[in-house]
Image 1: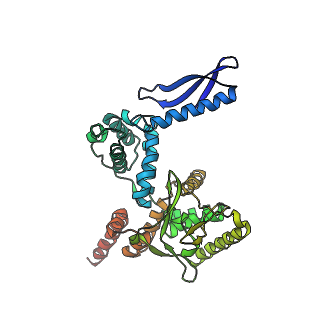
Image 2 (image 1 turned 120 degrees about the horizontal axis):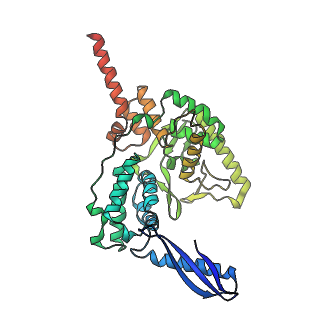
Image 3 (image 1 turned 90 degrees about the vertical axis):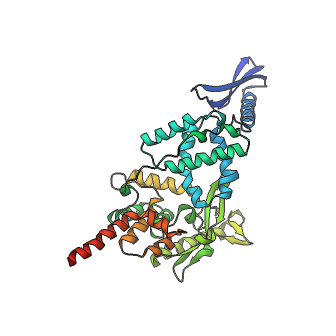
Length: 381
């Protein structure tokens, strides 16, 4: 953080710009002596000095990885990747940025990346293959955009790691846990309860939930058309159409649609009350009313869902096993499969393009079904 110190009374000041931590662990700091009319002006000059340095450093191999990640999201990931893929990479990026935050792109070596993966294994974190793919893409685009040279890609000497087998009992709630969770969420606001229920009962992703607008709601048939998703980019929230093959209609219980209808009516009343202050979204000349939005009609950030869910599970850690918000979607599919719902129905409900994805994700349930099949023949014998 930039700051200033007085050198000679009322005249000269030394400006300090903090540029992060060098690979050797030492803080990198630049200084400059200027004349200023007082400390207030000197502090402003210090901020300008630091911003100017950071901007110049951001154009070459001296830019920090954390800065480059923002550019990668803005200019590649948010444009080329599906919202669901970008959402999947968000947790991955969090660990990568945290580890390499204050290291410059040109200083990252193959050994540093290998040490990163060793640390992830030691701390028993998963998604190693996903982290490898993200790092590959980051450095591929760093070369493409001339941030580092073609022969300086540190990923060239890093072998692809294998994911450790995850313990399935950590990835979803069982039937009794679902009942317990549904009781506990009654302490949440009406909108937060509905968000959790849509993930669990509808199997929706958080980006799909925040993108629900009035035009996709069918209160006659108790369905929601899932055709959009909200993603987070360096420029802010972005509403995107779901890929054609992922558009789907999800049927919900009547009482849940009644709750949705109540919230929709409240949003409609709020819009009329605010008038010109309403900050909704227009598409093809039509205004869209988001089901989950702030008091001005702006949709919630997808990561705000993760935040309130984390706070909720931490509060109830003694009564409820902690799982990710995304795992409510897995809980939905696992419960339906255990109750005998056809795998093709589950695939359609979750929006998986290929049924192999569904089969691979929920093999733990199909293995139990296989045991049941064996038991049937055992009874005959």
